[in-house]
Length: 424
Image (cartoon, rainbow, N blue to C red; front, side, top):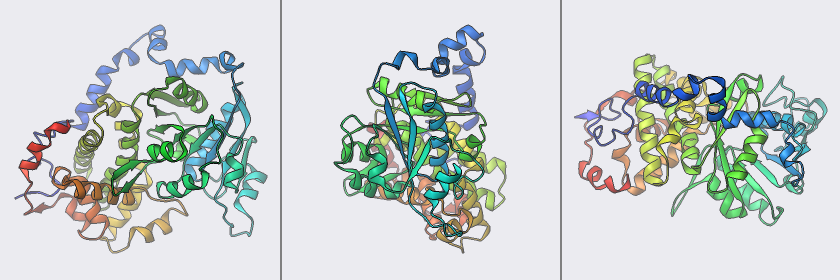
């Protein structure tokens, strides 16, 4: 007999990838001691992203091409991204002042169109009420028109809509366009999983970076300090341009050459957040929640490296990794709705709770858990990832929320584990 979601799973020795969250944090602080303990001069050397802010006039780039930015998406996080970007385009000479934001048109209870209200009040009254976006933000309900003059595209929509959006944009972009995805999720097709950044790159034939991190949007909106990670492939200069565009004194961005690692961290942490929410809803306590987070981080790393051998261990110590996992399991929307799901004994669906609690925002964890489960099932990896598998089975109504820590007669296929060593 073994745990379906074991605190000490028989595969533990094989998955001794990250043995405990406290140990991870300790290791991170030790490895980063040069930053936290160094005098100011040394700190400048180890924190190049902060130094970027010292060139706020962007003089070195003044002679280069002026970039026009369009944000594709206007939800909670998209609106915060617009605020960050708009504050910088007014200061940096290499960016055009105006920031276009594509808005999926909605009619508000007042009868007004959402785009009209945003442009009249400089505020997204539905998804980010009370926050001024910047007078240089222009809401546009026409996707083709919004992207027409842009050569920097910021994608921040629910991931399930991205394939359709990309199809609409094929052949309608400028030749020099670069993109960045703030989207957490993946598409699962017959030939396997596709990251959203890959979907954008392949369908639109553009360079696509990603930005992920411990970023609860409402906290950044009121300018509480936060960090984020930009993942890039080969072109560090493009990554540095995205860093300049997003960085402020309260939002510090670091570039990392690991698109898949950064993106998978942002995607998979929502599945772990559901598990944390189940634990909270059942009032299992902080010890259990800490164990859930530790095992979740272990499975995040293992799954990422099985899919992409290029994923770097160090990425999990960036904001996109352990920091994002912690903040999402403590205060994110996936945790909150999963908490309510568990409190109701799984009798109210996630769709019902999402509509009631999120006011038009979308959960990512449930759909991501399903997509991850499909990958695991198709490749015969279900027994390697008991947390991910159990989260989906609970979300789908096949198991009660309490199954997150219950015993099962199910036994792991150890031969499968031994045969998978080649992936690490």
